[in-house]
Length: 211
Image (cartoon, rainbow, N blue to C red; front, side):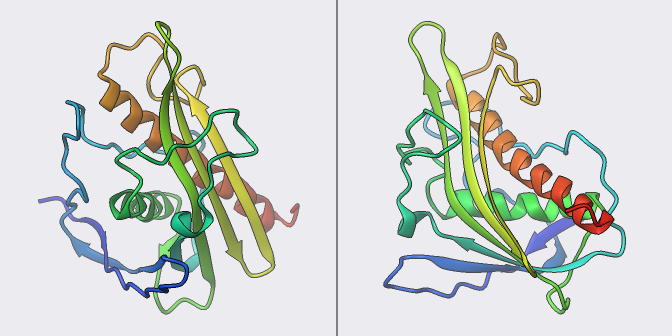
């Protein structure tokens, strides 16, 4: 059986802000979905997509700390999109946050980054907003919305994504024959991938001394 990265979740509850912290620690285990393969409507299982570009950060070690701040921020509008978030998708709860942290576990090692709870460098990821919307009548456009703030040493940046099925980076085309549930899962997954890839681009520039 193929061994994949799993993660241990350490929850630190802050009642005043209704949030939790997830410290991601790589361990060996079996990849298990955090919510059922089929949601409210038939749809394919959530997939993790590789980055568009290739990155090599060999030698980089991070202690990755993940914070879900969505409940405390209650964001309904993002600066990168005209689409309003209704925060009613299947990704609104802890299962959605878990998918984001799993994404980091998959893409970081693929780029040569080692996740290590004892690493001297701590990377903090704050999930601020995430939603998937199907907009329009007749001709429907799928939107994957995601906003994360990433901090590392003196670096701090908020990444905002609104990717649609018309985007060249979208894994699904505008005229693809898929269910509504599958479309929202694909485009939401792509939005998470896009945020991580934008960080990789910045990390590459930081390591090269150009940022």
